[in-house]
Length: 406
Image 1 (tube, one colour):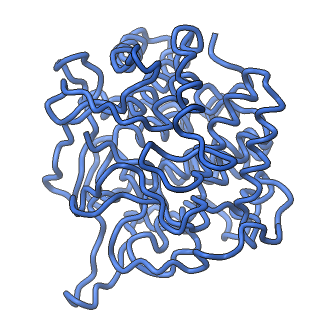
Image 2 (cartoon, one colour):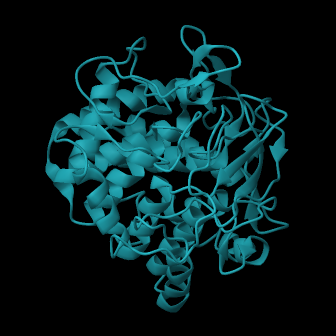
């Protein structure tokens, strides 16, 4: 299985500006919430998407605004009490639905060019390739992962609940109708990975991801509550059933998903596949409680957590995910210890590095170049800051409440 981790580094002449700066950098913003507020207010008024890696000075990550990162940032801003700022990101997601340069079927791209968003077709991030003498765009960013669409749904539903503006609910419905076409009957069912590559004929991704389906179970479930439509509850059940089927009792952990045949299980131990089901699925903290212990036993790295068994550094975002879970489980001492580890990954601007390692392996390979590993670089990362803010506030982004699902 090749379930693309969120907001990864990809090839294309990436320059790692500030990638080896000290971890104990001066804090321009006292809190993660403050950093997110500054990131939005530093931009011109109106709808906008934030750069996922503001320290990237070239290549595929330069000025790329990943949908997932922005969705989590919007949810975190609501949790930080900054609804008006969160709506600026939500409004950009709605504009992206209406103003794609090609698609008009309810999907979003995995990433766009960062900055203000208006009614014109949204641009994708790209870079000039000196070798080929042409402008290039990344195939992953042009595609649409099911899990990223689920996070956009979660952000829009959070804004719907917080603001009462039903434009956000309607946007989430459009996304849901597109994602449900990825429903799969093979093996344990669930939903396929989505699409990879450019219009007009992107590649269909037939692998299935545990964390993608956990995302979708939460998003479809919240949509069912928002609309009163049991159709979405059935879709949530299908996604949750797949997640349950990935449970490996012998290790007390979740597999990351399946290969492209939709049946063969990939037993790689990845952190988000352990933590997100406990946050996203109602009742999961009972039968699957051992997943947190497995993560603590096999994925601890120095003072935090790493991405997977292949990891070679602290994964800031994932460490914050564990901190959120521990806070919601009312284990404040353990959560406080992880927040201290997260704070040690702050940048000079008050943001957060994606990893403590210059290049942290994930255990996956690049879809754009299967010979190259997927890695997180030591770059300032919006997703890490958003999860750090969620950990500060004790907010569960899957239900936007400061509690575990019942």
